[in-house]
Image 1 (cartoon, rainbow over the protein chains, first blue to last red):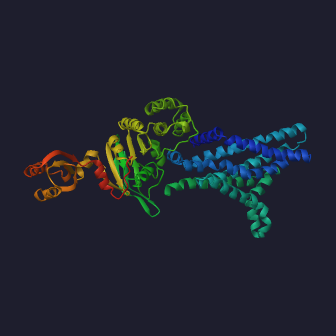
Image 2 (image 1 turned 30 degrees about the vertical axis):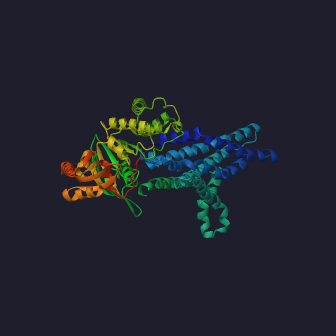
Image 3 (image 1 turned 90 degrees about the vertical axis):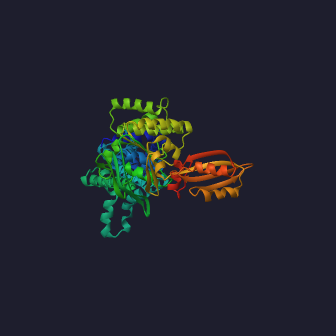
Length: 237
Length: 315
């Protein structure tokens, strides 16, 4: 476990010594800011709901972009051979990298709090609890998408492939809830339970149910486990 | 210290390493020599735990690489082929990263940093970005990272590839120095490099060990032939071919006519010296020997002999 921290530090340093993190944060703030101010000024709506509903969409493209290089880059550079022959478990490598990717997403999410403070000053936010659970839900959703992204990054040494595979898987989770009408009724319950949207909407409404937390936890765990397995599979190539 | 037992590795249907076994001692420099694709890197990757053997095992101090890979990896410093590095890091940060994963406390890291900077000649680049360093420096950075925890075993896969002659000499000196206190296992396809650096040579060909010993042992073992080069005046080519009838133990390998002399190459077994016979034969025929040089077969011939269907690369 001790070796998660050096891996985490290395990845964070790599984000912030290259333009990667800055570009990501700025563009994320611009895109989310645009959607917030749009409704704020045009429709005279001063609530966080429009912002919260747009962020999952922005995630769809941004998170695979952040996580696409986490492992694929090591593979293409050959440094995977260094890192996997150091006395560190594959699991710890994956967790360290995952936490670094997730941290960047959470920092990006934090930048949108500026809109919350704007609204407080305008004096129209009444339900602070809903804002809190809204952010909690988005953080958990970011956790799921990052786990998918690091998995996509582990199966290839090409970052573009990792990006596209990441979007494809994330899109499946995103769309499941929206395609329920096409699914036979017997399957609808299962599909709905698997969709991120279903659990996210519960949390965003202010209901923190352990079932939803377990859902997010197990999807994250599943993809991190798969990533670890993919990393280990090189041994038997 | 390391025992390799019937180690095999298959890539699909290709057997890259075929049940090889050998033991390595505490303080020796061992060279793994073979043509490209002979199985050198695959073997080193199994020793370092990057690949799992298809069959067999690697045993280090009673622990084996399949069940206790972390324990073994703690004792090994590994420089992979092509020396991959994180180019966006500073040299200092890169070494620190290795030290942190290897749980070297801050105080000890300072000493370790001093040691590897000194040993690898990294003064002056410690605060530079890895990507901006020259190839020679990068190689030394990779080596420094492999040595940061002062390991008992150093595994170096083609450590001098791509370096200029001066840098090669520097790395060679360093490896020799390290070999006094550690086990250094290095691979190379450059024979001269191996011969100049290591105590013991293991030649691998098509995934099998074809020779194992010091360079002198290999030369003696290989049922050596002596090659005799002659420059003769006053003979013609046909007469020289007749020499074989009188001295049956020789083999005439080439006869080449020059302006006013003939260059002849003869081979005979090390066991029976034929120089006197050749000389007398020349005198009897009234030839003048301008030059006669005997040379034992060298390691290069032996290597080529053992790995004939491989493509030997000279650098």
